[in-house]
Amino acid sequence: MIDDLLNPAHLPDRTERVCLIQTHISLVLLADEFVYKIKKPVNFGFLDFSTLKKRRYYCHQEIILNRRLSKDTYIGVLPIIYDDKVYRMGIGKGRAVEYAVKMKRLPDEMLMRSVFLRGELKGKHLEKITAVLARFHLGARNSPDIDKFGEPEMFKINTDENFAQTEKYIGRTIQRRDFEALRKWTGDFYNANRELFLRRIKAKKIRDCHGDLHMEHICLTKNLPIFDCIEFNRRFRYTDIVSDIAFLLMDLEYHGGEAFSKILWNSYKERAGEEGKVDSLLAFYKVYRAFVRGKVSSFQLDDNHIERERKEEATQTARRYFGLARSYIE
Image 1 (cartoon, rainbow, N blue to C red):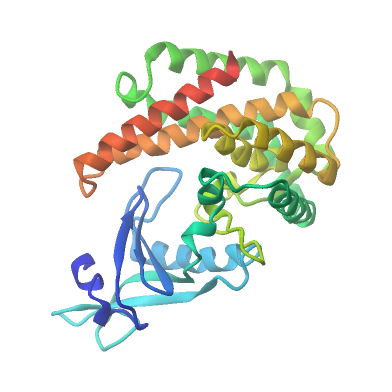
Image 2: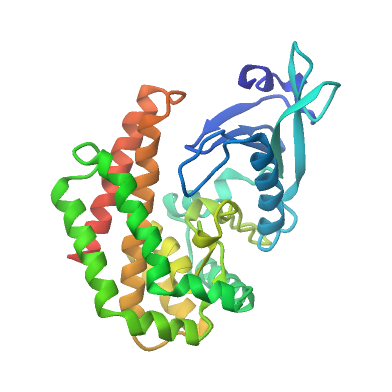
């Protein structure tokens, strides 16, 4: 299927070139003007794309949820058709064997990460980002059902899952001493800060957020599209707004942008009306976010479709994220 879809003639829109990028959960086809994203038939527990019906459903969820912050980028869901000879996307006769999310291709050079790495990230960019995110967070959906996800016992499901799913990578991408230190620190934080979590619920800070807010998901073009939110599990999206912004702050710090992280956080705090003991909560969520990135990078080591060179890169990336998580608790 992949070989067929890398043929421009088998795509629904005219393009000179097509290239493939793989993540642990997706096949992403980059054409000249559009991007086509296919979900892999995987089940990680927290994510279940194991059946065609589920993959189709989550393709549609991806469209609906991402239009909140990237209205004009997400176009629709296309079937991948197989006629017993050739796979085509959205064209021809045959049966639908997969589905793909169709998006406008955003300029790679304008992604926040690219702009930062070129040394061109400015204060005006950070102000625009915090204005958009604070407005989004304060207007995002809140309800008693969403509030439950802010309870420490509920959020602990996420951190417990992280440690359980990362244990197999001890000695490969994370050292035993770091794993144990992070697990103990996380447990101690829950024990010492239960009232803080409950105050956040009372203050209506638990919202239907983005869930995967890092620099590669923000495009610094005129309308500032912010894309690729979490569609597959609401407990990653129903979260404290500080947890959401913590991902972006952590990502800046991972890339050496500590000064930018401080500016962005101070601007966001003011716009979102944050005060009190929120800085200690931010540290907790930055540890959580860095650990998640280390875990997700580790998952690539078990994907038989990813070449060895990419797995070596994923190993180094995971180690750096786990190292960052450890640095926060020190």
